Image (cartoon, rainbow over all chains, first blue to last red; front, top):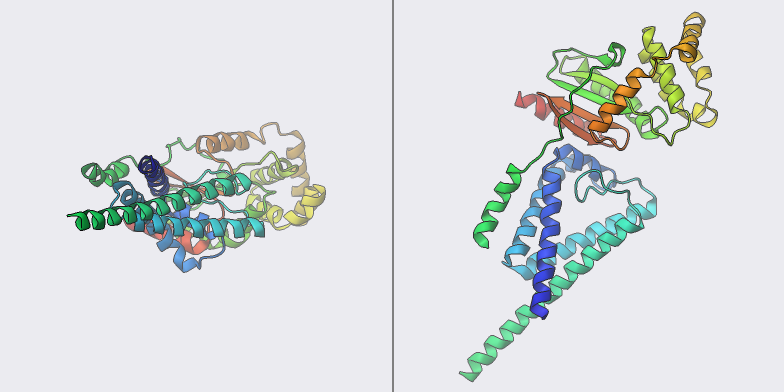
Length: 151
Length: 204
């Protein structure tokens, strides 16, 4: 049962990252650069490289999670990224900045409690998958040790 | 599963969609500037009562005009997109378009944006416009605002085009190159816009 839950979480988390990357890549990079600039955290010189390469990183991370290759580490990176995004959104909300999250391309709803709740849910999912992946790996390694001891 | 993953990025690139092309209806001439044969057209949708539009108009547009429009690289088209939540924006649009018919569009549009914080309080756009227009011309503008039933025609067509472009905020830039329309929402920092335009121009 736990394995099935982990698999479902893994697929959903992967889909989120793949879609987030794809939604940005189908638009001009300038649009995502504008979205990043509204957070007033990134210097102008870093906007272009971030806007160009972050979507590819999200796509690669999503594919890595989906494939299950190095799942523990890709899920951990996803959790760290989502923690960072969540912290940035909380800060922007607290400062009353009019930001366009840009998380899934342009045309999203404005930053508000609903947007924050969505981000929190994604973060919870990523943390769940990360914990599940580490536990599953630990269980497999204990089983391997125990089967070797039995032999 | 892994074989499928290898093909996913390629499938995504194939599925890349640019913004749905919408046939560009030319705005009235006074709203256009720059060479008609410029390789890129920038359509700038603004609302006179929107503070970000003011910031774009005052801080970014002059740089775009001096570096791209004046050099023949970009043709600029102003488009009106008055937002329903702004009480006086329709009136401001009328004054700007009336002035446009007298060859005074740039002067009056600039004055309306520049004094936004003043008339935003009381709606007295007339007084602000009168400060930069000679009295005889000002009277003609007032007559047009009062009596010209076609004054809003370009606004209607701009808004219809904006609707087809999927506009939901101002300022919005639509960058047109080789018939392909790319909508960019929000306040674009000039350095980033410059980099993007330079890359588009370099592609030929």
